[in-house]
Amino acid sequence: MKKNSKGKTIIEVKNLVKKYGDFTAVDGISFEVHDGEIFGLLGPNGAGKTTTLEIIETLRDETEGEVIVNGFSINKQPAEIKKIIGVQLQQAGFYPNLNLVQLIDLFAGLYGVDVDPDKLLAKVSLVDKKKSQVKDLSGGQKQRFSIATTLINNPKIIFLDEPTTGLDPQARRNLWELVKQIRDSGATIVMTTHYMEEAEYLCDRVGIMDQGKIIDIGTPSSLIDGLISRGFEKKKEVREATLEDVFIDLTGKELRD
Image 1 (cartoon, one colour):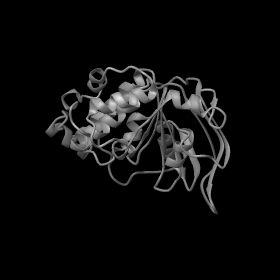
Image 2 (cartoon, helix red, strand yellow):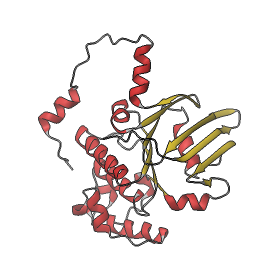
Image 3 (tube, one colour):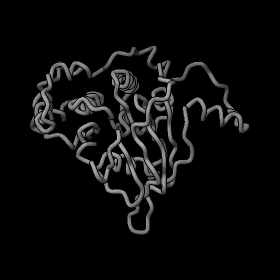
């Protein structure tokens, strides 16, 4: 179940601008993320989504504007922000010669926290792969391990950048359930995705970006209702199931790692 009640503001973005020379990647956007929600940032390639996330994560400097994360300024208190966030790493961010347990121990040491690798891997169904290297995992396993690393420091806010790209339907839907479990455990999640079905299923609210600007923001239902109220009609009959639903029903929901 999605959370319908509005929590306190945990991320506040005010008039954010990012320029690269004459090119404006992020063009004066403002939005809020509520505590305990899954917030999706949607848009075509080049819309400015990833740049926006990287600024909030303190990985990239802004040109103008202000970002407050859980009461901390990205300019004045970036170290405090880094303590309370988890950022999804891609495969290239892992040392290739270390196995999953060794990688978890390494990141735990960097954070200065104690973590039981088996318990963490159990959350993402990877205990049986704990002696494997990341390069030997399937696509779904790599993504689940990547998400596991975001949980090492028990963050208040987790950032996921297109977490299910390239996954098969079973792996994608299992990852959806994992994301929901993480949110239900008390974390706030900010994510990007190109899959609109994914955004509709997971996100409490979404912001739609294009050409560096936020065009609209709201719950998936309110945005869909707004489109219909403007006279939109689907030419094709809307069915109660999709071809992906057929695929999952026939082949099962279990992981095929």
